[in-house]
Image (cartoon, rainbow, N blue to C red; front, side, top):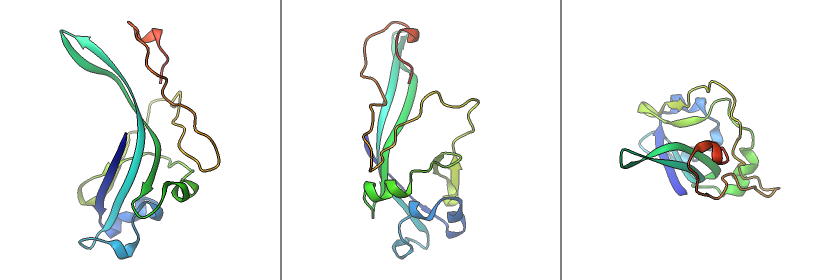
Length: 139
C-alpha cells in the first residue's frame, strides 16, 4: 500500500510527538503545524465466508517506511529508527495525538521497518489456501 497521511496540529499539542514528524514551522497552515507523510505499508489479511458473506477475519498493517512530504524516506529513516513507547494512531480533534491502546501482551512479530543500511525481509508470507487459521503462518 502506498498512501498519504496528513493533518493539522495546534502548536501547543506538538510536543507530544518528535519535531521531525512535522513539516518545518515556516510551512504552517491556518496557524497550525502540518503533518504530511508519504507512507508505504504491507497488509496481512484473512477473510472468512460467514453466512454467505465475506468478512475480515484477521487484519494487520505493517509499516514499511514513511517520510514527511518535505523529506525523503532514507534520511528520515536514519532519524526515525527508535520506535515510540506507544504507536501514534492518528491526530484527533484539535490536532491532539491519539495513540493505539496498550496491548495485553507483546507482539509475537514486529514489522521490519526500512533502514538505509540493511535489506528488509518479507514481513507477510505470500498467501496459500487453508481452511483453518492453524494451517497457516501467523502474522
